[in-house]
Structures are given as C-alpha cells and as structure tokens.
Amino acid sequence: MRVSRLRNVGLICSGLVAGVLLSIGISAVAQRTTSPLPLDELRQFSNVFAAIKNNYVEDVPDSKLINGAIAGMLADLDPHSAYLDAEAFKEMQTATQGEFGGLGIEIGTEDGFVKVISPIEDTPATRAGMQAGDLIIKINDASTKGMSLTDAVGLMRGPVKTPITLTVMRQGAQQPIVVNLVRDVIKVRSVRSKMLPNDIAYVRIAQFQERTGADLVKHLRELSATKSPRGLILDLRNDPGGLLTGAIGVSAAFLKPDVLVVSTDGRVPEARHKYLANPVDYARGESDYLNNLPAWAKTVPMVVLVNSGSASASEIVAGALQDHKRATVMGNQTFGKGSVQVILPISQDTAIKITTSRYFTPSGRSIQALGVTPDLMVTDTAKGDLFTVVRESDLQKHLVNGQGKEADSKTEDITIIEEVPAKGDDAPKPFKFGEADDFQLDQAVNFLLGKTVNRGPVRSRKTASATPADLTVKPAQPEMPSTKEKPAKP
Image 1 (cartoon, rainbow, N blue to C red):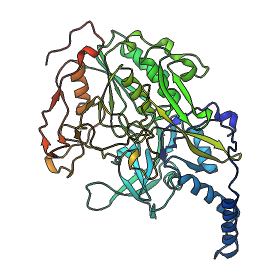
Image 2 (cartoon, rainbow, N blue to C red; image 1 turned 180 degrees about the horizontal axis):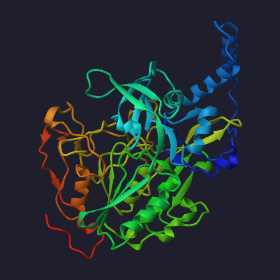
Image 3 (tube, rainbow, N blue to C red; image 1 turned 90 degrees about the vertical axis):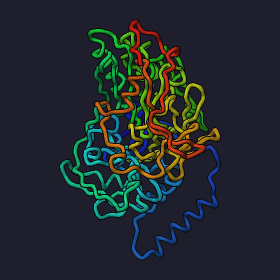
Image 4 (spheres, one colour; image 1 turned 180 degrees about the vertical axis):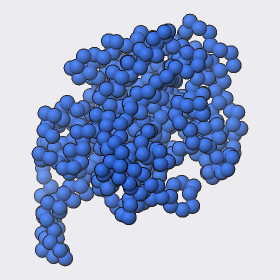
C-alpha cells in the first residue's frame, strides 16, 4: 500500500483486534530526524547483532534479527505501538471496510499474555461466550506467554469455517476455560436502530467505520419517518473505536456546527490539531452527509450509554457530547484509550504503528488511562456488573494520562466492582444490548421519561458495605431540551 493510498484512510482510534482487524491510526507523516543519532548505542546494537550472527547455535537470517529488533523497540513503548510486517500491513486495507475474516475480538496484553479488551457483537467470539477481561493463555496448543499481538493475530486468523480452540483464564473461574470457535467472515454492522415504546429512539454503534456517519443519518431519518422521537439513546457500549472521522461525524450530527469535538497534542506540529464539527474534518472533501440530517437530532433529549468496553473513538463521542452538555452519559467508566497512533511506512510492504499524541475532550480533559466518567453510574444489570472491568490503565506499559490522573476503580464515592463475584441466583445474567432484559437501557428510558433511575447495587468507598439496590437518582430535567409532550410521571 503506497503512501498516497494511506492518506485516504484517515486516523483510527482503537486497539488491536485479533482475527478481526488491526485497529490502527493511519497518517502519511514524513520521517525526519530531530536529534543526533546515538552512535554509542548503535555501536552496541551492531555488536549484539554480530555476536548473534557469529555465535548463535543456528544460522539466523538478517531480516529476522532486524525485524525482531524493530518489533522489540516498539513493543517496549506502549500497548498500541507495534511493528507491522507485510501481512499485518496488508491487513490494514480491510480494517475500515467493515468486513474481514476472523473471530471478532479486540485484544491487548497483560502479564505477557493476550487479553480480551472487547468481543464484537454478532461474531464467533460473542457466540462462543468470550468476555472482556478473558486472558488467552493458549491458542490451540501454542502458549501465548510472551507472544506479540501480531503473532497472536496471525494464529487466530485463518480460512473461514476452520475451527480454533482458545484456552482462557477468567476472573472468578477456578480453572482455565476451553473455548471452541469457528472462524468466519466478520461483517460488522456499524449502526443499528429501532423505535422503543413512548417514542424513544434507540441507536447502537458497534464500531466506527467509513460509512458510520452516513449510516447514522439514514437510521435517524428512518426513525422519524412518521413523527420525531421525544428522546434518543445512543448506545456505545463495547464499541472498541474505529475511524476518527467517523467519531467526528457522529458527534457533529448532534452538536452545533463548527464547535470543537476533540483535539490532539504531541511533540511534533503534525500531532497537534483541533477537530471541529465541520465537514472538512469528518467528510474529508466528499459530500456532506449531514445535509440530510433531520432537524430534531440537534435538540432531542439524549442519553449516551457507555461501559468499560467503550474505547477510543466512542470515548471521543461521549466526551464531546458530555462537555457540550448535549447529552447525559450513563453506564460505567469507559476504557480510557486517549492516544492516537499513526502509520509510518518503512518499506514498500512494512510499516510501524507509533503513538504520536494524546487526544483531549473539548474542555481539555485527557482521558488517557482514565476514561470518561458517566454523569450517572449505572451497573450492567440490576444485580451488579456482568462485564469484567479491564481498561487502558490495566495494560502493561500504558501511556500515562499527562494530567496527573489515572483510572481508579473507585470513581467518585462509589465503585461498581464486587470483591467476591456473586453466584447462583444472585449472579448477574448475560443479556443482549438493546433487548428487553437490558437494565441500563431501561434506566436510560426512565431518565428520558422523567422517571426514577435505578443505579443498581453499588459499594460504598468509605465503608465498603453493600448499598441497597434501590438507590435511585432523579434526572436533571432542566438541563434537557424541552419537548412538546409531557414526560410520564414516576
């Protein structure tokens, strides 16, 4: 893929997805040397290279040694910087198209093993019961201890309809769990929507792709085919991110024109930029799909649902709508990936992915290793949290926040992390986002209707004693745009 091709792809704000895609930030940034080369250190590298070539028990190709050295340099920086060999570099071509082969899980690293950050819905991973926080210790018969993410992706990818076995360690499980999956073509449906009772519109974005913004407009128009909704719920739970342009476009759909959506800051001028709710930043010279946006989208009362699997591009949207007081953010603390990666080609078919900047919400908040704190913390289910809380701050060598803050499981005066997982009838039960048993969705509807919001069972930070599950919060209705219909009474 040539540099000219890379310019058309845009920045991607997410982590590494195993058997799905390499979620990568892409930008044609010229390589330049800003400081003298460290000659003494390079001489030491040359000596080690020569020692291996002359003394190792087997002959090692020069290319293997050089590629390994490059991969090691990048892997030691942060969880999102990486060396892209020819196969990984080629895989980028399908990263933003919404269709690719594999399993459907986003991965990171922890303690030298591969860790599931988020499974993608409607994929082999979710159908097999993979969960955020699962530690993959074996891929078929191969141990993942010390394995690079690129190598893990290579093992998990394969021909469609072929089986693969993952062995995982899961929080609360006494023994490793063997998960049998069948590789499939992953077709990520970026936007889904439906009309809920009481004229509440529900829109779910599973991942930010090239057409996410345009698809969102299409769904919003279909939702108001007969009449305008009285409220809107934007569901970003377990959305691992995607294209930055998609995040800006989605934010711009609900914000006033030309307001700040997100800014980036890094060491070099190319890493410093302010992205506005403007077609220059989300349409990139193509036709402005927001011209067809229904007018009600700018004023409808709105809730954004997030959880620990909401990462990067989805955090940009949640942070922008929260800072501009356009929506109430509800759910759990988000993942906390507030860094931007770019691709620097180093040959015709290889490249490096390197972190170049942090991004900031409109108010100047860095959410790196912190995440977006919801306005209303609500547990996954009425009986507590279902998803394992794994965030950027849990990843080894993660980039620090830069503002002296990092994620704490005890947000504000409460934490939603149970010290001992509940069992039996008291244990939270799995559910599907947007369906009848979706507790957080029910609370978002209650908020929009002016009813009592049940935040679920929480644990006091000071006393560590259980708080009754009927803890409730009244919505701050004065901050919400008015509607013609009166909200239902509690």
